[in-house]
Image 1 (cartoon, rainbow, N blue to C red):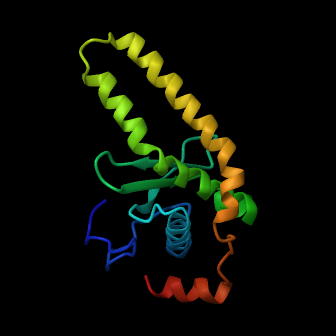
Image 2: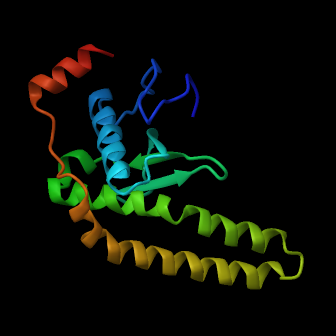
Length: 168
């Protein structure tokens, strides 16, 4: 994450990184919605930016937090904007926001296992992979319920999107 620092999650004159599968207005809309979702979940210390890289195959979105900071990069699948319904988008954003809620716990376990010196690499990898799988299941289960706490997703109007495009 480069450029001028963000204040309360807002961009501070940073140029939009080219995202081939999203327009700058779409990426900005996703970031703004994520900021509102994080505020609703009291996770507003986090700053999330849409990555120019797409999400991995078979994933709608993937979030990559930075250890020791409250900065994350959000990867979006190439067809997410057009394929997912507003309700799906709300759940997807909730899902990724919940990953930020547990990031410090996951990072703590990962760093402990890597630096303990008392646990061999193979057993540590099994424990960590199981922990990550259980976290993913928890996030999957909670996303549907917690999404009700987040404002509904609304697609920007064509006029609003055109205005945002001209701002870039």
